[in-house]
Length: 108
Figure (cartoon, rainbow, N blue to C red):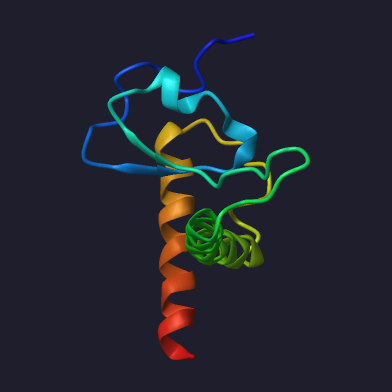
């Protein structure tokens, strides 16, 4: 198993990683980056009001991201297996899918 999901030093200090609880340990692997992850309720305890508000803000942002990913999948290009020989084609597929989804959002 790989130690790192991404190679060290990949993320610059200026970005924020929005993660869910499935990516525990990212803070220790990438100490230079800001990681926004919800806080889990302690066993037999409760979260404070500040922690609940922070979790709500994080989940609100993540819902927007999940909806955008779902919108890209509607077009099918981004979800189907591409059997191509050109490495740049995958990037073009994602660029076209993102452009179509953004066009759809502006038309609504």
